[in-house]
Length: 175
Image (cartoon, rainbow, N blue to C red; front, top):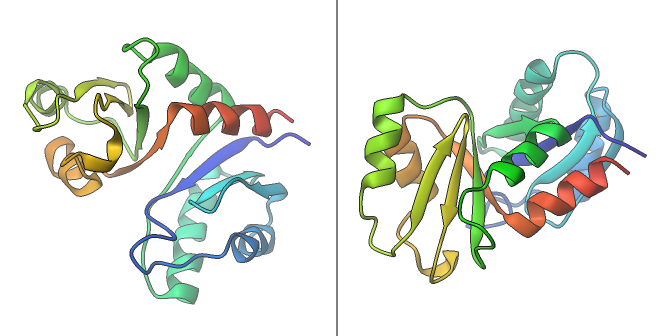
């Protein structure tokens, strides 16, 4: 099995926003996707959507909102795009490296200012295209660099995954 898209849903199965992965697979199938699978219960969906990926992403956001009563951004990339982000990761073998996949390309001045700002945890940041690359030297669990703070600073929302999960998603998508 191979999937054409890696679909990442922001902030599910935390803070009361429950989204059972079996139901997510069913919703994706109902929307016409094939080769549907999930990886861990944090909103990682692998599939081949029918039609335009952007339209599928929007339909998935709407279906989740309609059924579960909350809105969550859906960010999707091809396996090649996630692999390219992994290759471009500028902080070497960072033990706590993350990719924050953005819904769009942030303004270059906002990105530069955000990456140069001290966020309190010694984080190293780089925006490359529509991905924020993060090294959390003390781990992501203690950082003040939240998704909301990233969205305010960059002007676009997104969702983060650690490097290991990102690499596993590429492997699984390629079958």
